[in-house]
Length: 201
Length: 201
DNA sequence: GTCTATACGAAGATAGAC
DNA sequence: GTCTATCTTCGTATAGAC
Image (cartoon, rainbow over all chains, first blue to last red; front, side):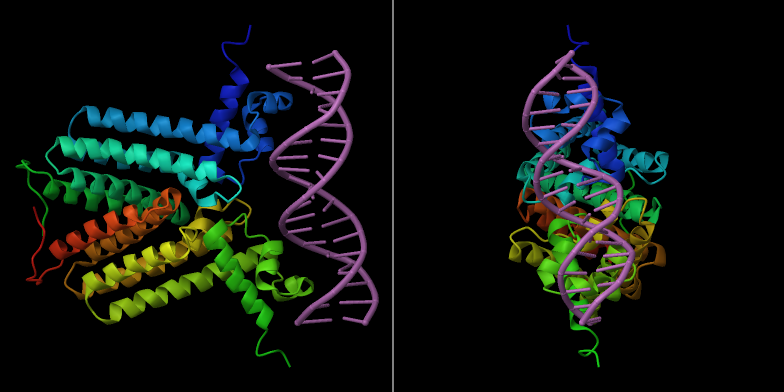
């Protein structure tokens, strides 16, 4: 009887995601995942017949699902501006809590992907698409055209990811806060039927 | 008499920058730089006593200067909207010309930097700061407050970098075009004394 | 400035026992 | 599911000759 479906396997995936965030894809070696998770080295290729690539791939899927869940939760309140504010705050908190060490694991994989593992680039792209689609649906539901809604969804994900990278590099939340403020004002102006004070100069 | 100040040294730095763009920091090994540049392996540590880290660092500086020069050229026309449009177009062209293989070398270093080479993170941060300051100066010159100008500068760099990552992952220029369109409209609305048609909904 | 040779470590992956 | 080798490749870096 397996320990409720392989404990060490799940721990390895979680550790891989954590290492991706803090040290990038290349630094997420099997050795480091084993050390971080405490999983036994003998069963690596039992759990992951596809080797390291499969492990990274599953970590990308897990991290993607996790963030997608947070986006879904934020969009439940049905206030697009608040939801996007919360999305930015989420990334700012992750940065601060980690001492500016934790970036986005999907970005890590997307940037470091090389030609011998094209599957990983596709997995990263799928995650990005899910995130931005979740935002797009929210915007479209609130009166934007499909085109504008999707455009804004992609734009916001791009701004967040770029800002996170800059925050990490300079050990400051300033880029993320700049992006959050600009997007906040932009949304106030873009969304119809919002009588609140916009900050259009 | 050195061949006009070491040919192979300059070629190595150029090759390192090219490899950073297309394959990331970890994949930019000394071996690959030598193969790409055709430089002789015997003189690596003669030209770069700091080893691989110094080589990467100089490639970051070179790439940073190159892009900064393009930003400066684009801002010469003294039209902020056109300059930013040109900046986006530059990245789109680089992506398309390379078959979506070339990303941003600074991002590669910023994302993959690990604790044993903190100098590289600082170099990346310096480059980001120079780029966004160049944009900020342009905006401030055209009537925005210092705060707003710098905020927009950081925001635009973040949006470009994030969009480039997404474009590479999904082999499409759509994210970059989405960001370019949104920023274009935002600038039209943000800058004072522009009688042209804004696209405020 | 450039050469060859080499030390040394880390990484991915496999084999075969238990 | 897990263990202990072990193979192979690749990476950084150094030594010493030319």
